[in-house]
Length: 316
Image 1 (cartoon, rainbow, N blue to C red):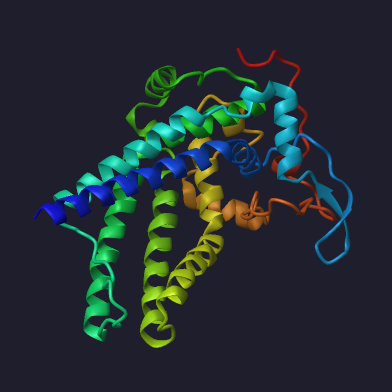
Image 2 (cartoon, one colour; image 1 turned 30 degrees about the vertical axis):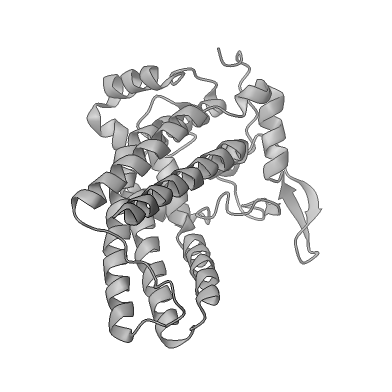
């Protein structure tokens, strides 16, 4: 009993250490995520310049993610690059703690591989897949729902860069702003496409990995790598839902970024998806380095224009 208790304690400590490291990495990379969110919203403060694609073809290129971040720092200073970080970290902690508690309360404990090198039987492998998939879906859905209000606050804090507003200056002030103008539903703006994206990614990744492990890959180390590669592949395929989530998270607010003429008044997230798809803008922000300017050779929409900052004061 003592040995089992020590193992469980060590596992919990290791989990919290890994979670802390993920938070630290997320905080360090926040300026790049900030830039990516603004790009997903269709905001380009700098005109494209002549450049070359990855294959050497001449193109008109937009600033890469690092140049975009440098523009934010030039405008708002070093600390301005970390706007929205606090609610993001708070949301991550809420998601981690509450989703684990919900899964444990439902009796969804994970099934781990055997410590020895003996491969699992087909029946055991299927049981492991079924149990872990059910747990992963519950963790994903519950984590998204409990943390989404903080996600909304984070995205809107970032989106203020476009119109230079100061509506969302703190977590408490943002809560008051959202509730006053949109009610409870405002805290869940953009929730549906995010759920569709994350749950689809979990189901597709888990199912594909299960089939690969059963019929193709037998080596344990190779299986670990295949899981990461598979998840990355499906995340890339489902990326358009991330762009739609970002747009719908801002729409409905008082921000310039979420209102016409900058953003059309969408009826729902599917309307947003269809509009962005028709304009070929579902992959905004997918590339960090080579960013060819969209719309060359055809009339540019409002979302692909190169909009300088309004001549207003900086953030308070």
